[in-house]
Amino acid sequence: MSQDTETTRSVAAIRSAIANGDVTATALAQQQLARVRSHDQVPGAEINSFLSLAEERALSQAARIDDLAKAGDPLPSLAGVPVGVKDLLTMQGAPATAGSAMLKNYHPPYDATGVARLDAAGAILMGKLNCDAFGMGSSNENSAYGPVRNPRALDRVPGGSSGGSAAAVAAGFCTASLGTDTGGSIRQPAAFCGVVGLLPTYGRISRYGLIAFASSLDRVGPFANSVADVAELLQVMAGPDPMDATSSHAAVDDYVAAAGTPATGMRIGVPQEYFAEGLDPEIRAAVERTLDQLRSAGNTVQPIQLPHTQYAVPTYYVLCTAEASSNLSRFDGVRYGHRAAGAKNLQQLFRESREEGFGAEVKRRILLGTYALSAGYYDAYYRKAQQVRTLIARDFLSSFAEVDAIVTPSTPAPAWKLGERVDDPISMYLADIYTVGPSLAGICGISVPCGATGTGLPIGVQVLAGHFQEAKLLRVAAAIEAT
Image (cartoon, rainbow, N blue to C red; front, side, top):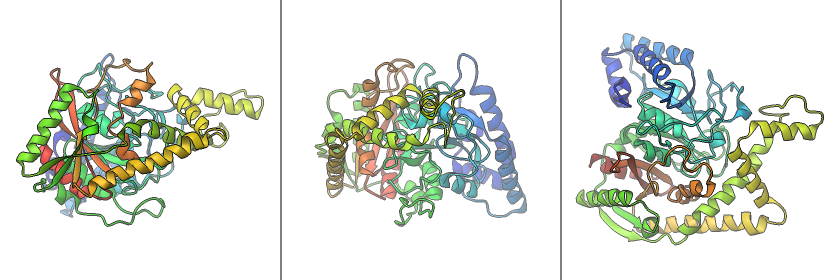
């Protein structure tokens, strides 16, 4: 799909154009809302990235920005920038379904903290974006509202669970978007759709207003077409939040400046475990070219070891399903969500409400998590997985004592065809093999486009840095983008 819209401009260019009177925020918002209505749901070629539009809110914000511009007042950092929001985040003026029939009619009365901070910075919040139900999936085929198609190849998946967020940016429906990442749900869709997706350190951006999947893993992060633009969004959203006890008080660096200073003289680690059997040859070649370019830019590239990588996927799926079992127990037809009609007793109400409201993948993960937490298996599975998680985190911490950043493939293969893996959940889970380890460790990461396959499918490279080292991360990402 052609990106012949104002959204192909950078955040800074949009703000500058509005300030100079070259375009109004209202005209830009109207253009993008019309583009979504006319292109996102085209029969036979729909991308299906937007689930709802917040037109009244978007135009009201645009009018406020235009008033500031007419008065010659300074514009906020994201003035007039069209932004979409993943439907796992609450936002006034639009439903928050979490991609599930369980929350089909839920209209939240408040904004998530990340959403509120974007609004305060002048962003035009266009609406809510499709996602795998409750963030559970690697292909965005688990949404109750239909799959999302990859704008780069309409017969392919966009990745999950933030597939709608990546697809909306790739299609030019919005300049940037918000996604969430539990085990790769920002970085994998970014790689599949050929955009930039950033995973902040756990606690860097508040989780207040995020509908929980796995609370010790869930994170909010931005998508955009450039490293500079994700840095702009991160700058606005980062920092402590009194509404989220897990948000960090660590100092917020100048991320925008970091994104404008490509890395040189840095030590780049390459984990051999991420280049083992199963990596697509074209992706391997693209990442190796990227490493050569980093060397040419004056950085040192050296091998490192992450010995517990082989345990990352099973550890992740024990822990995330256990937390999902706990978090989703609130959806019982009484307190939250869908309520089945005609139930004759409480047990029937619980059973039928969950049967009708939850999709197959959500049910699968709840069952797995409940099993792992049960009295007879808690020590064998959940406790053991927590111990292995500590070992995986130590691997990364040890490596960052030797290197400044780590570079790996974002995914083992390019985007697969729609329907290709829906009946093979294990194959789907293994698509997260390069992203779940950093998620378990709580470190920051980013996926940056680094080429394409022979058939034109995007390839992404993943950069990782230590806790609260987003500035360092953005410098390496900027060096990759510059090449």
